[in-house]
Image 1: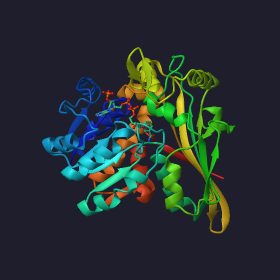
Image 2: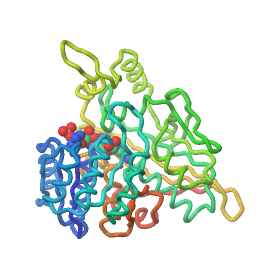
Image 3: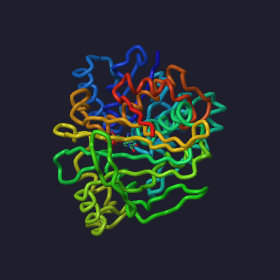
Image 4: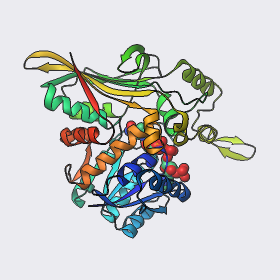
Length: 396
Ligand code: NDP
């Protein structure tokens, strides 16, 4: 039986808390804490309505302060912390876990607020500290990163002797009815999309202009969609841990409408992350834009359509070339019916719960700092089928 602290009460926090609450045999004590306690209380009410569980505890903390994180862990006597706040808080929450003796799980790697540059180095540097403390940190337990690493590990265990080419494809063919909105935190999302593209080929990183490389792909249950090459964090850990990979790329679909809005916002300076002077105040344009855009947690109400995310893996099996496509299809309206969320929050919150469950049940154990592909994929793949994200496989 696990006692957990979930930090962050946004779109992903709502789904993760619902899914943990629905497994009382695994999570017998759940504290949901965030910067704004009223958001935790609102999720508690939803859980009462949707899951019928009334014992979720809520609290308030500023997770930028490791001392507050450590105090919260001790106050609620929890063994494991699920971080679904923002990437900016990763290091302070990890430090708080080390101070108070708790395991750690997140869904996105650390990114310094002043520079749009995410990478695993800062968190991997804490490996020895976690190891010495006998604690486990599991990095990137969302869908991408997260399930994409588990799909890759599964292919290596069951389908291929060696992986040579990896293409991660991510489509959202949903319609939320707003002219422009992002499906997770707008600030983090826009920082990621406006970066230069990057992929791994023949032992080195190759860069492209932002969203300049694209092609059409026929997604299962969706059909043809234009997808764009982007840099994504699991490319870093997968090419490190699976050195036979010769080329690894990440692709995401965007509509023309979305790209047009983004271009205009960039052109007028609204996506800048440096401070500008405005009527005697300092403001960061992207943070101001976030305040104007719809809250991703509220998009689910009339959202229709599906997402499809998966891995195309090519390599060899028994000396013969072989390729597989492992993927999940998720329906926005179904997610809303179950947990009052859209599919992007859902496809992140469910793996966040499963990763936490793996640690609580000791099916995945350290000690140290680990990425998802370093553990046995089978129990995780099994839980995806049981808890709302069934996967399918095509062989070529
Ligand atoms: P939201 O912005 O909706 O929610 C973030 C939450 O964190 C808010 O409740 C916010 O509080 C809280 N928070 C922010 N700063 C602090 C702080 N200093 N202390 C305590 N709480 C804080 O984001 P999402 O739910 O959309 O995303 C959550 C995470 O999931 C992000 O890291 C994102 O990158 C990741 N993600 C991962 C994906 C994957 O597949 N791996 C896909 C999608 C998202 P407040 O309400 O007061 O602002």
